[in-house]
Length: 119
Image 1 (cartoon, rainbow, N blue to C red):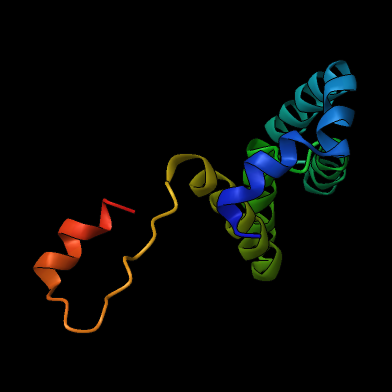
Image 2: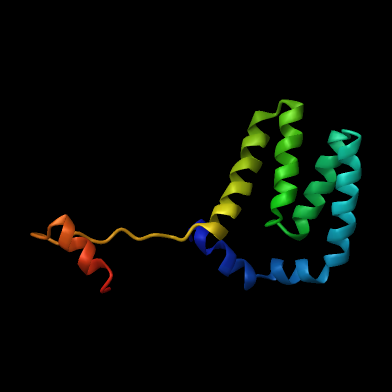
């Protein structure tokens, strides 16, 4: 499965159903996370953000906040992990998966472009 298929598979997952059932919990956790951020309470931010992600692992804001928190703590491995997840999720939404046309023997680049749309 590619990251581009993440959105489609997530909508069909039990995790999506769970996230839907816990919308009020997500809201409370998000509010708590923002309150903790105001006071730079890093370990508590990590705990709350991870609880949020245990309900909805596609929450880009939670990954962003974890990335920023780990950066402030100097934990580059976890900073990078949450960066990659955050932007992987974002790219799965905004970028379309592109297929390279198959070049057939004897086919020029110009004719390849013209026939690739016929598939």
